[in-house]
Image (cartoon, rainbow, N blue to C red):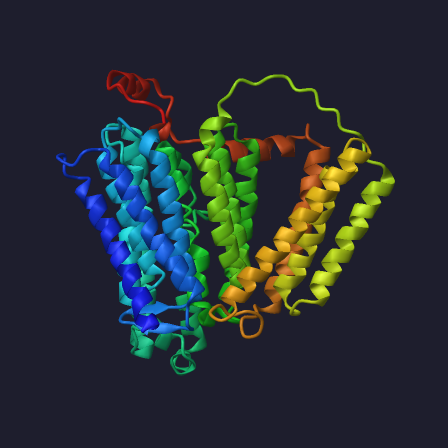
Length: 509
């Protein structure tokens, strides 16, 4: 009974939230109803959380496949949707498209959540297409702005290309396996019907399809230009839309196990990480800094998938989505009066710095020895050790006096405890539904290539930092700056668009 009751309640709550958003389109409905709508929007998130806590294994409910991953993603998407819409009640009050905004946002996130619950590839494709269409309309919400219309058209063209490529991959799978249901497509019998070259081609199609919404090179331009949209729209993109790549690749993990496509994904994502990080460092526009960070983080998430660490990619998608959505909603706080602040930081002694390096080396070694021996765990151990060293230097080694060091050590230890519990909780939650460890190992070449890329980029970064006045540094800086700046037709400060904006009484939110 519980197996049927919880999904039924969830889908009823989704239908109720969509219905309430549609009522807002009626001009006779008072604007105060938007508060009721945001309260209703919380119900699907709560019902998904209850289903996640009281789940009873994996069940198929009509065309839906419901497991811990599905419920986690549904709860995640509707939680961000609720937070963003609740924030927008006052933030966008007075906008011409105020009612339409809430309707579009609700329908987009509802379709997004349903896509990750789908067991039928046709239904997944339909819901994902509706999600991309909704995001395109949201980016172009302010139709009176030519730049918004241009950004919407660019996004729409790229999203349509990605959707058609994903459609091609699904049709190929259907033709080769004779199945539409995802659970049957991923079975060993169905996978055995595919030749190795067919699996590789399908994997490459899926990779291209997910790189577009993830704004990976060379499809990154749409996300950079989308900053013209109202800030809450940039926040809600992180509710399983720009970070959909890790989710989609996790669902199709058996296709990628040991395939050469993982190496292709690793190379392209690594370049996007470097490009996004560079954009974040050279940009002075705060929203473009956040967008550059998103490009880099999504690249890192796809690297996790390339190394077979799908559970880590899901954790990354959820935690980064919550964190980055919060940063976008706080983007207005970046505009403030700056006062000169005199920082008095005590230089760290060699003893404290060496102790941090020893601690990082020790924790990285312990993590590596107690984890499954695969490529991703090796990279995780290196990243963990490096992060421990940096955190130790900032919180403890550079602290002022004994009191400062004690407080820094308490913060350091507290962060470590929180990391351990969060890591363990997600691991136990996802181990039933996400392939962890054996069966998802990437080619050894992928791990070796990533290690070479990390070392080479670290050495290059140190050289450029040391020779900041060199021509090479200037060339790279200007290239990244030009890459991240809007084109002429997207340039917000163009006199023609500013004049039109002021004449229409618009605002720059």
